[in-house]
Amino acid sequence: MPKPERQVLVCVNARPPGHPKGSCSQAGGDAVFDGLRDLVRDRGLHDRVMVNRTYCLKHCSKGPVVAVQPDNVWYGGVGPGDVEDICSTHLEQGRTVERLLMPDIPWE
Image (cartoon, rainbow, N blue to C red; front, side, top):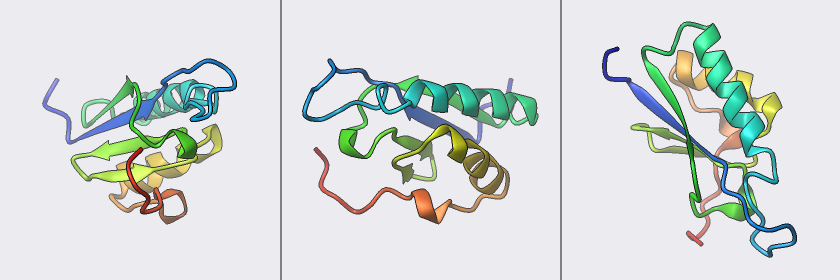
């Protein structure tokens, strides 16, 4: 396998229910990870794109959070229904999905 062009980090961090920061896992991070991983594989992108689970990306209140590197593009509030847009628009066409971009907020 060649070195991937992009690495997609999907936060699946879990905190106890009721935690004031919330967590990407409780907001659906695992389903986002599964959907992106499967779509990348199904579209034959797995030699160019690596999808990884990660833990806290410091924007818990905007989760699930997805970061695409080396593009340094951060998406917030990503749900399973957004996976298609991230894959087709960003990973295949190299354009950001504007509606999902993380707002310019302080790092928690």
